[in-house]
Amino acid sequence: MTSLPGLIAVVLVFLVASAISLPEHAGADVQYFPVPSVSSSKNDGNDAGLIVPILITDPDGELKYIVAPMIVRNSIVGTRGAINLFRYEPGGREIRFTGSYTERIERKVVFSYADPAFSQGRYSLNFGASFFKNATSRFFSLGQTTSVENETNYTAREVRANWRFGVYANEVTQIAVGQRFRNVRLQKGGTDLPFTVDRFPTVDGVQGESLILGHRATFYYDTRNSLVSPTDGMAVTAYAEVNQNIRNGDHPIYSRYELEMKKLFPSESKRAILIVRADLQATIGTQVPFFEQSSLGGQNNLRGFGVDRFIDKHLVSLSVEERIHLARTKIAGVIADFEIAPFLDTGQVFNNFKEVNFNDYRMTPGIGFRGIVRPNVVGRVDYGYSREGGAIFAGLDFPY
Image (tube, rainbow, N blue to C red; front, top):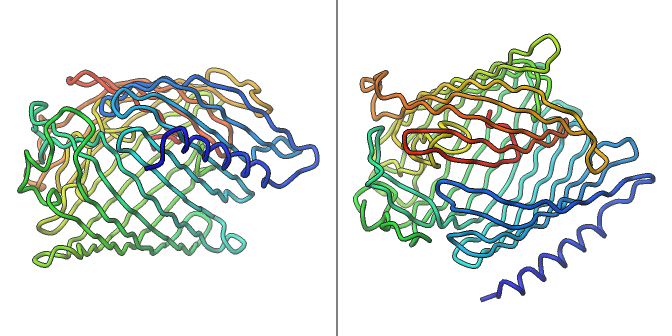
């Protein structure tokens, strides 16, 4: 097995090679600055380390590349070496690569390509692939009323691949088709919690290996003024998906549906923006793996709970967030905006629609802090409070 120092050396060589291969631009600017990386997550433990973002801008000051090597010490899985590479091109085209190697169990390789204006803006094209082992995944059983005493842990070993091709009906409407592949196996986790396979052996998706092929059709209506860092507009997404669980010979077919709506209400100066998001999900079929069902908790909904805190076939959720501009400054040669964002998330999961009950809704108030380099980069830290204590999440995008 490759040693951690050996892997870090490989990462550094890869970083140097990547930097050398970057195209030269007359007058382009390169800035770098070390940043302490300290975080605490409900599921993932505590991180302490260093990240060194390298920002490359073109002669006009537009951000073109981010190269970000990182090394952190995690309280659960040990030392992690990681590299993040991002390339931004005109028209919103974006290429991302992330690779990491951790002392205990965890591995990650992720690649994605997105071009929302493919072929002179007539189409959109997305594809990506990933392999990862997440040693801190949690499962509490299915349903809205699961107890914290039922908390179990497993390592999610997954291989994923996906593609999507969209055709624009007009400037704000798109119809897309795509497929996804997902291979999942549960392995022993990285914590002292009970192993999910031992505690819930009869739950669908826990035993053996799942091999899923999904076929999706999606409708998009989007009037927002930016895909990554919008300040105005509305977005509606609706999809229908048919899935084949190839390793399940008894009930291999099930379907999933979602309707999501997001609306931004900016003030006249756009220094304050109210965002409302509503989401409805449904899963139809039997013997659906638990990790393919609807989920609440994590960095994008019900942020006061850990990832996948509540899981069941169907979901309804509502989130409200007020993004308030605090300051604008120049950092490493680019203009950055900083925001504070109080929010309230609410929602519930359920097995059938007759079970929907207002008393079962969970609510998590919280506050977020954002750093934005428009139009391509958003960094955020969110803290949500819940009756189980609360949770902190960091990410490179808005939650919605």
